[in-house]
Length: 80
Image (cartoon, helix red, strand yellow):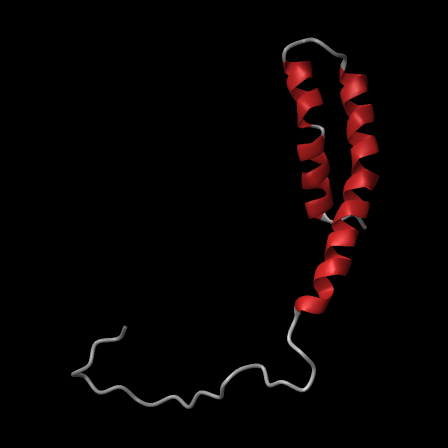
């Protein structure tokens, strides 16, 4: 299944062809061919980006965050 981000990035990459179609400089088949070519290129680029940034998460063994214990509010304080 193709991710929506891939399709959006492919649409962004083929935007100049869409603009030239609006100006009636090229045919719609050429625009669609450029979009179809842009889809696998966008998928590869975004997969590479996901691969590079996958290691930037939390280190293993670290807690999710500081534990917070809720305290009841009395009527005199205003919430932040």
